[in-house]
Length: 128
Image (tube, rainbow, N blue to C red; front, top):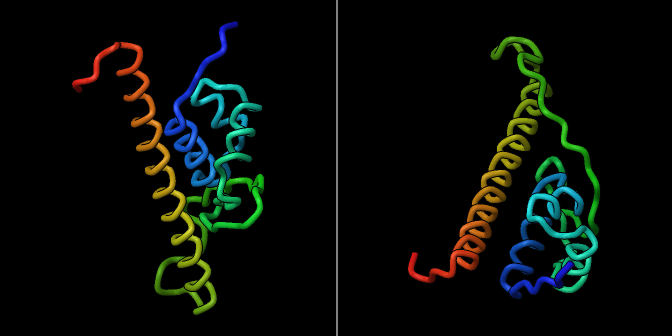
C-alpha cells in the first residue's frame, strides 16, 4: 500500500476532533476519517493538548474512555412536583446533554470541513 502524506492542518484537525468529541475513541475517529488507529494515536501524541472531553461534556487532563449514557426519555416525576435536589439533578443532566449536543455539532462541522478539503484535493480544484 502506498504511503499517504497528510497535511499538518489535517493532522491537527483530526487530533482536535478526537479531543473535543465526548466519549470518542481513537479507533472510532480513525475509522471516520479513513486513517489507521496507530497513525491517529501518533498524531495525538505529537499534536495533542493532553485534554480529552468525556461522555458528559467535561474536560479531563488525561484521555479517558468514558461511556456515553443517553438520558432516558420520560424519566422522573412531572415538572413542578420534583424536590429541589431532583430539579438540580435534572438541570445537571440537561446541561450535560446540551454540552454533548454542542460537541456533536462541532464534530460534524469539523468532519464536514475535512471532507470538503479532501474532495478539493482529490478533484484538483482550488476555487470552491
